[in-house]
Structure formats: C-alpha cells, structure tokens
Image (cartoon, rainbow, N blue to C red):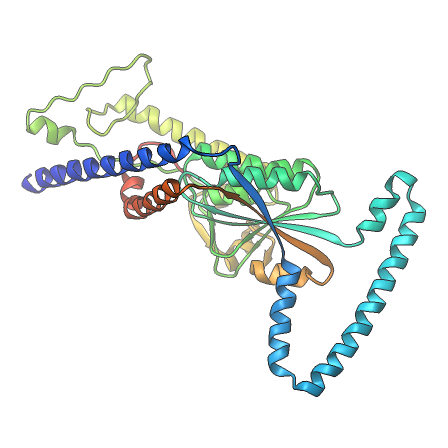
Length: 361
C-alpha cells in the first residue's frame, strides 16, 4: 500500500510537471501566432529523377578516368539527341490522333508521372494536415494515367485521426488515379487502415503490418483515493456520457458499455478493410496480430515485397517522379514550441498510451 501511495504522489507530480510544460509551450506558440503572416506554408517539389541521376553521375565521375569519361560524354550526347528526336516524333503522332483541344497536352506529356508523398504518423496522426495540402495540390494536375505513391510509417493511434487520414487517401482513388502505398518499417492498426485504401501495397520483407484491432487501457485509483479519504466527484448528463474513469468507481454496466463501443469500433475497422481489400480473409487477420512483410503477402495484406527505394528507382527510367511536400512556415517561438512539444511527446509516449481512455487502433 505504501508503494501505491508513493506511486500516486509520483504520478500527481509528473502530471503537474507535464501540465506546466504544456502551458509554456501553448503560450509560446500563441505568441508566435499573433505575428503570423497569412502564408501558413508552401509546397516544395523535388524531381527525384534528377536526384537519382546525380547519385549515378557522382559515382561514375569517381570511377572513370579522363579518356573513359570523354567517351562516355560523347555516347551520352548521342543518346540524348536520339531520345529527344524520338519523343518529338511520338508527340507529333499522338497530336494527330487527338482533337485540337487536347493536342497540346499530348505534345507536352509523353511520360507517366509519379507523385510521391511521405506520411509519418504519430498517435494523433498530426501530419494529416500536411497530407491534406499535398493531396489537394497533386489532384490539381494528376490524371488517371499518372500514379500517386505514399510512403506510410505508423503504428496507429486515435481512431478519428486515422479515419480522416484514410479519407484523405480515398480522395485519390475516388478520382480514379492509381494509388500505391509503400511500407518500409511499419503500417499497423491505423497505419494499415491507411494502407488498405491503396490499389497496391508494397512492403519491405520485414516491415510490420496488420494489427487489425482496437485497444484501450487505463489505471484506476479509486481504491487508493478511498483509502486516503479523498472523494472524487464527476457529474454527467446522459446515461453513457462517461462509462469508465481513472479516479471514480467503475461499474460493471459502465465497463460493459465501454467494451461494447470497442467491439463496434473493431467491426467498423474490419468492414473498412473488407471494403478496400476484398481478397483478405478478415476473420483470419482481424485478431490484432501483426505480420512481417514475408508473412503478410501470404495472407494478402500486401501485394509486393519491395522497399520504397527499389520501387521508385525501378520506375525512374520510364516515368517522371516528383516528391511533393507541404512545409509549414514557423516563427522562432513556434519552432521552439514544437521542438519542446516533440521532446515531451517522446518522453511521455508510453505513459500517454497507458493513461488515456480513448479508443485506439
């Protein structure tokens, strides 16, 4: 009992400390927001073909001597000249088969375009705001002949947050634009919910996928408070406004209702997976288990075993690949605030997962 008392005091001190840090961060961010310009952020686009070419050229420069390099330059100029002539010829032939309205488009675009987005998901799926802007930008130009590749890394988090992230990806497939999700490390729970929206899922051999389940856990200090003659009162309107609590006395009826809500969320999750990947035996995989890539392909959770680098590099020869990123413009107080917030998040990640009572994927 002494241990529980000390633990309770330690928890109270920690929560107080964290609350003080959050207040400081909030004040810093709000102060920065007062002087914030209307430009909240901007889109940055990088052509990955040029990046790949630069890597190749750097290695070639180091390997070839002067004579070999001269021969290479001569052959390269000849190849580029022939390639340009072929493109011009192909564009003319395409233009002849098009109407006057679409002829210019045919002449301008002869190669497939791939737009690459990155999504690193924390518990709150905070990057969904950037993802929204990136997808909105891509959809202004992307066509069904193009492709969008989203590199997802997430172990899941809040149900509503990852539901929104999945809906953002659905905007791409709703426009009949091919969507590929690449998973190099982990796309579990909410992360897999996002991935299954794609037309194709590509994962590294030891990437973690699945965990189609829902979890919620919390400590309860009611007995400790009662032992120390501390009353905890909570007032609600509505029979199920609050089902379980950390400090009050939880009832069997409240527990049963909370479990019922968890089960309903799990049903919705399974229905979502079935809708987007009908080839998956949901009864078999929706147990909360995870699979490494090599095993995930056996149960149809993914379609191919490849890293994102391998997938993109293989297509660079026949497609123009553009990496699209929405970057927020932050003032100095905001930068300090977000840095502090990230440090606190990392420090309290485990505690937060154990103390909250929301439903999680």
